[in-house]
Image 1 (cartoon, one colour):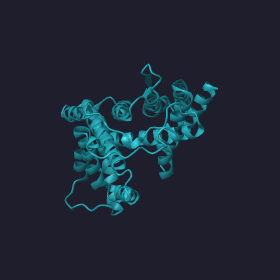
Image 2 (cartoon, helix red, strand yellow):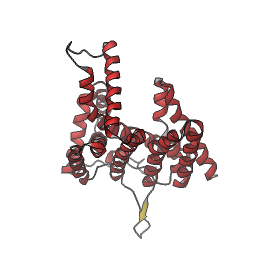
Image 3 (cartoon, one colour):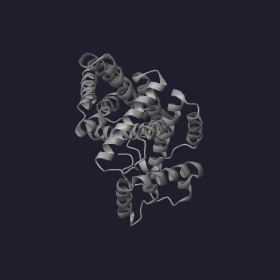
Image 4 (cartoon, helix red, strand yellow):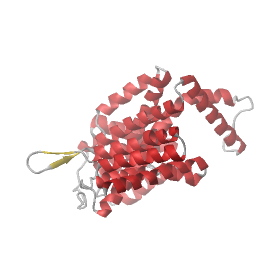
Length: 317
């Protein structure tokens, strides 16, 4: 049963990965869901099913498309999904019959590290020459800016040099890629875990997600990543990707803090609705604020200072 589940999940995941070549908005959405089948296989049937899925999808991609496509699938989609699922199911007993599962805050840090490695790995699959990589990224940005100007989405001064602007923006691209990888992994992990839980196959109890706190040492990791950016080359790409990934992690932590501190409040529902609506319409403003809240929570332990309403009865269901 396990090999069949793994092979099926790998083939579905590879198909979702491959449709991106069509370039349509729906294809991009389906591509974002490519890790989902591997997450489901690894969470519901153990991590070995995830390994089988990774191998099956990589072979399918290599045969149907090309060897680099199969390698890209394994590196960008399958390996990160398998590893995060493996960590999510790690547990240890205390000798008294109590099981301690891997903390969600630590899992988020691993998701950030995985996102950074995936960003660098995908860049190296593209080319091992940094100047070529930067030129490709700059060209993509320039084309995007041209399309935005034609569509009147942005307005630039008449003397603006799009090529020069693209070159300046290129080093910041790994920051956004790292953050987007984190968002994709977190969303797919939650969807897969919820689906597996509904089916009754999830080994660990459902955690109380609002209690998620990123460990304080992640702040030191963020500082190290910021310093690494100055090294340039692919090392700088790694630092930029890790910076973006950790900032996304702290954003999720800040969002969890709001959920946690509003428990039991009569105005909780409208407050959360307002936060999510603002996160959509004012993303550029609210995302940095949530990130700072998450960082402050890790540094000062804001949850310890606030009142602790009783947990809802569905914590361990």
